[in-house]
Image (cartoon, rainbow, N blue to C red; front, side):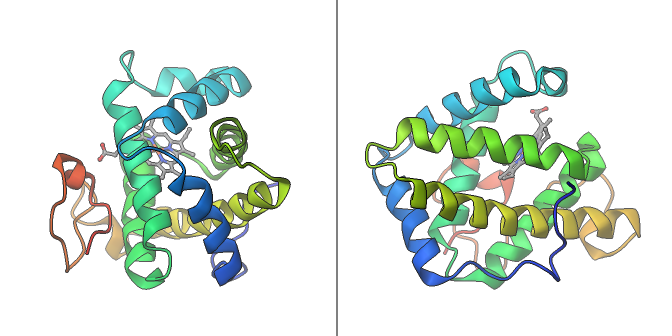
Length: 181
Ligand code: HEM
């Protein structure tokens, strides 16, 4: 089934955001353990996507982990996070030609990774991640659609996602344009 669009996916409820945050708060700061498990799961579950990624995955793991944790951290500022996700989704479409059908693989690999790394994992935590991931996907695909129709998330061609207006860089990963206060 292809992912639902942003018009059909409500912002996750506060209790859902809280459950997802709890699962991340147990991870040591700067940990790429979640990203390690995530990519291992992804490449096992969908070997065909391996070729899209570089041979050496170290930087990619750090960027993905950082982006996800920042999104989770600022979920209660949904407008800023949504803007970031749209730019990220536009970049995924424009630079890597990532398609809607790729997103469910990533979702499954991610939910399994959380269950593996979170010491207090519960099935309600997994359900919360499914809901949050659906919202993330819907925003990224909204950005991707703008690329296809030549909209604002698309321009200028070849640019990385730009930082939001309130962008103090906490780390070198900032260039990926993750939302920060
Ligand atoms: C939760 C959804 C996702 C998040 C948060 C995410 C995050 C990221 C980030 C932060 C980057 C680095 C961008 C940069 O260098 O500026 C990236 C790159 C990339 N992502 Fe994603 N991504 C997601 C979904 C996907 C999906 C569904 C695919 C398809 C299998 C995918 C494939 C890639 C590829 C191929 C790269 C480039 C790797 C490279 O050449 O270095 N991503 N992603």
